[in-house]
Length: 388
Ligand code: F6P
Image (tube, rainbow, N blue to C red; front, top):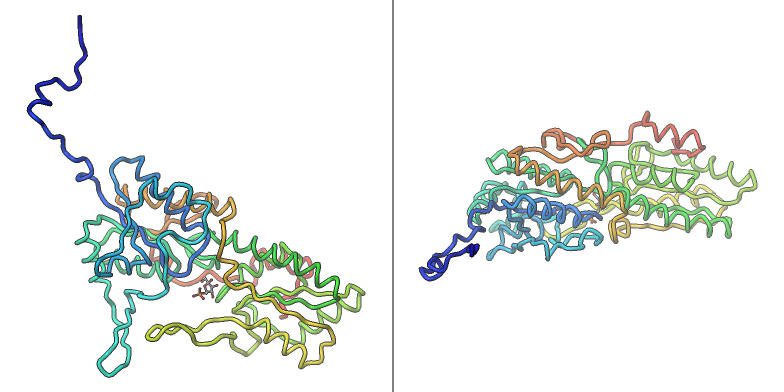
């Protein structure tokens, strides 16, 4: 009788050892940098799933952006299917993140107690290579993509994945996290409308948007605001007062205003303060809602005014379905670019297709709300004032 013998006994007896397949695997390093954003975990999971399917790549994560690589000992975690299972619904990033330790401007304490910022990108590339990595997927905003480009120019194969709730990155129509932020802001706005109506109040809601007012613009249209103030369109206090008065005269005794944190009066500056850690100080925006309240009261506005600053609530929690899908698709695309050897690029969404653009295109500036943007036209057409 015929017997199928897969491993004949003599082979086992000779104790033939089979090669460890993982030693032939290539290694991708993944990092998340800058402010966090709903959808980061879905990108990580997308990369891991696509890599696993290829059977040729291992995926590792660097903790707290690229600090994980530079720390001694390095803080790296292997991103297995088990470790990333189900994380696409979770906000934040399992790799943690930071705004500190930018290798392009790394703060170094001098002997005289002052701080000097130096470019340590070549060290970062050497370290990544010495740890056995073949490529890097860097998930982050414009600052992180500048780092991606610098590391790529030093010969490390790098692919960027765009991230920011502000949606102000060039080279992509949309960033994941933005839709979630708009949904959170709109839900909050809807709640403020009912209380504004009950009390005949003016409600001012401040949303994020440092240089670009996309969150404010989308929320104003979705929520039905009377006034929307953006960094790109400096406001005139008198115009805002006129709009408020017009609204009360009509007997509709309440007003809802959405203001982006970076909005500024004509001829004035955005409101904020210096903050951050020693050696790494930033100018943090915030407070324009209270500034506006004060200015309206000073100008004699008779209505009761209340302010709400949404802050980091907009960056937290579970991503909406659209962002999970976009983030997953971007993760898969990032892996494919690495596997195909197509480096120096950033994943992007263009005309509803997930594609890629050269990193250079992505870091050339920011995507601002233009006066002739179609949504500005829509907003004006439904009576939203930009205070201009
Ligand atoms: O860039 C995204 C963003 O959320 C901005 O809208 C905001 O100004 C900034 O990050 C806040 O940064 P941090 O988390 O460091 O306070």
